[in-house]
Length: 502
Image (cartoon, rainbow, N blue to C red; front, side, top):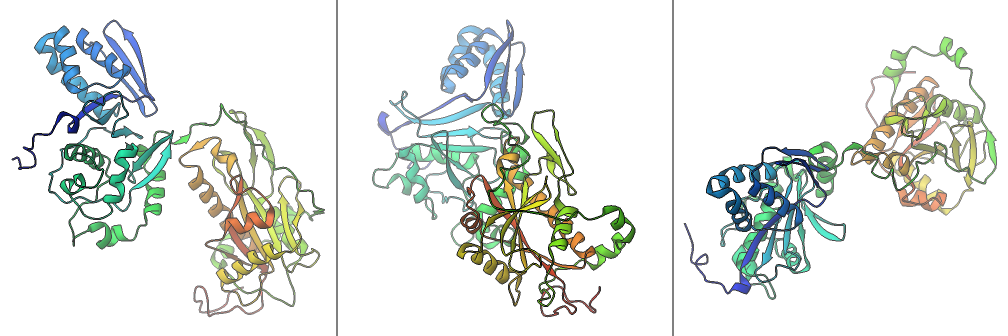
């Protein structure tokens, strides 16, 4: 069924041309006189037993953009009409394998950049759907996001293996699609695109999952709890890191291996004074520690510290030694210096560092310290300052404590240790390591009868200001409050307990 708008005869300059090409990050290699193999970051596709015209068509796609009609003419000239059916099957295989990019051009502007391009950025079929109705209601998904990659503006939807690349002329559609509208209305915008160009661009949007479904007054993205509970940033992070098909590289890809050297296991030492920490007798602890199940069952977050008997340097040193010291260093098969600590770390990279921010600790001066895991000593990073006071204040408020915590244990990540090797999963891997360290500190602290409380958030910019470290190189990713455990625990915060267990 056609509409009146469909039947409008547009001048040539207002019409659009649809083209396609092989994705430029792929490679085409011959396997024989009638066979080729295409490789891309998402995988490979072999095309055996191609007819001469089909071989020419594939080569043309690798050389540049072609229309479907141009490709069909190439095939028909060499393979005849009978070869066209086989070509359509080959063409479909290319699209299903995510080897093609589709673009929309204005007629007469073949040499110019396309208005929009549908780009495979993950593993999945790259095929546009039907052209939207001119008067149908459309809207940009609230989960869509735009970013600059390789000098181009890309618009993506969480979980989609496709993105739409827009030029300046077509980028204005994003703002106009913030509310419900129609292709016909978009074509009426001042300085806008012709109707057919709008419809063909929205066709690419739909294929990439960029359009909301529903209608004015009935929007599942905003009304249904399963969608409404997600912010765009949270869903993008979840989908990107938990749907490997939505990205080209996932896991240990070493994408920076040929550009940067791996970072050493130990950071550069701080220039401040050093304090050697006592080494606990682990053999004695094996004999005297409480049973593991008892420790596990008694673990809880304690938000009060005993002001009359603060944590001691010996206790802090034992907690750090048992939880985070470096037991050994070794070189991996990839040449990266790796480490072994009491808690697990993906690939043994152990990127986490610990910074005790001390306000009250018997035997140790207040200030921001760094724990050198290889030497089991503390290095002074900063004397107490307005910047460290802000960190203490934030930790006190976050933990709902009535007084300043004796020690704020700040956990940082040396990002390059992980990101040199891992792609897409690097940051979530860091967060997993933080969780493993949290539990280790909780259990060791419980065994030592200390007060431990992990915090759910913090300000990495505040830590950068206090430490002087570069925000992008090493930043805080977790924090706990540590102190001596009071004889009586508060019952007004935390998990209710029928009795205070010791």
